[in-house]
Length: 156
Image 1 (cartoon, rainbow, N blue to C red):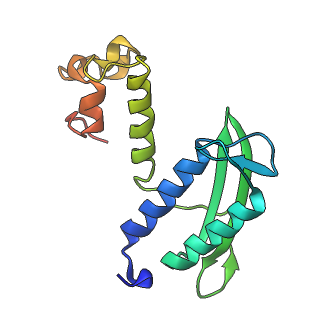
Image 2: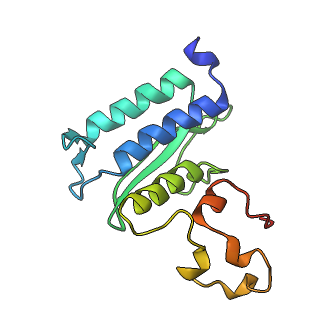
């Protein structure tokens, strides 16, 4: 497949997977990022790899942050926010995330299940009651499995 003709979804998926891998294993040292395999890579190498990926999928702009233990350990902006005006991506830029966080959230949930902190089939109200929807008959049947499969029956 021609790298420049990849679909929008493929482009987003590549960025999500790359970001998730790196973001999950960031260190507090701003000159290095620790990878999933424990190897430290220089931020300059990370910046270079991000640019290569962006070029390969034709992504004009990106703002990325890596958060570790509630602290931003890496942040950078790449490319342009407007192809025609060539306006660069800035810290103030707003990107629509759409449903991009869903795979990351699902990964987090599955890790909690692996650790035994969450049961896929235990009603969620038993973990955290939510009085705003207690009146709804479906409330007590909503589990992590139901939420992850988008079958709660509740509106957005």
